[in-house]
Structure formats: C-alpha cells, structure tokens
Image (cartoon, rainbow, N blue to C red; front, side, top):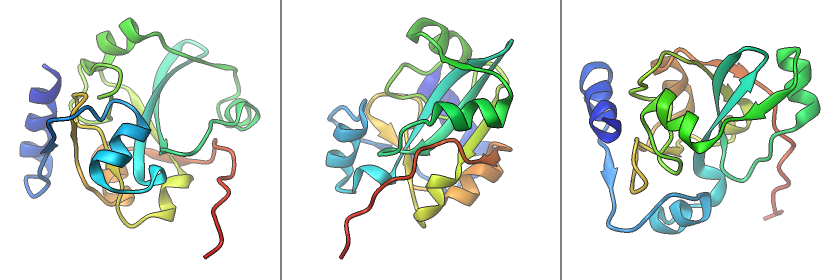
Length: 159
C-alpha cells in the first residue's frame, strides 16, 4: 500500500504535487537532506506516539528534538514513541517513509511550529526513497493537522 496510498491521496487532494522518487535511501533526516541538497531542518520528519490511549502523528522539522515537558503540557499525558511494527500497521508506511498522507488508519496529525521557519519542507511520501516538496501550511491543511509547539528550540547559525 504505502507509496500507492500516498499517490492516491495526492491524486485526490492535491494533483499539482509531484512525488519525488530517488534511487538512494532517504530513510533518515541526514540521508534525505543530502539526497535533496537541503539543510536537515527542511526535512519534515513524522513521528508516531501513543499518548494516553490514542495514537498520533507529529510532523516537525528534521533537526528539531521533541521536548518531553512541552509534550506533556500540550497533551496532558506522557507520550511514548510507537515501535516500528505498530507504525507500519497504523500508517502502512515503513519507518523512514512515514508521512501524514495516505494513512491506513485515521490518526490525529499535529504539525510542530518549528516547520514554519521554512517556505517549503520535504516530508517522506510513504517509502524510504520518496518525498514531496510542500509548504508547511498547505501540508497541515491537506491532513487537517493542528499546529502545536512541542519541540526544543533549534539554534541556528548566524549568517
């Protein structure tokens, strides 16, 4: 399913967005940034968590780290990352290709405000060698995401 479900998602909701498929792996933020020739921050990583009794996806900039205190304040409970098998079962996407598009199971999606530092980000597209280029605001609209602030501040290098 995975890449096919993401293709179907974009065909139905945003046919103007092309899926980029590369011959090399983009399964980690570092590999994706190198393959696409962008800074790690522009890679939009999708993380899967269980919070209380529900499973959620959080999309954040690639070089950001989740702040556990902010997560607990935001959701009112401690968050636990889901294991790879559960992620595949819920999303149909393999770890390294997880994205908020074309999900096997309806999940709440949240976008961290860290993404707003960029006009365009590159989330995966359901496979470990695929991605899309998309404005963070449009991504959030397409997947009905809520904006939250759960990442640690990212220190940027001065110009």
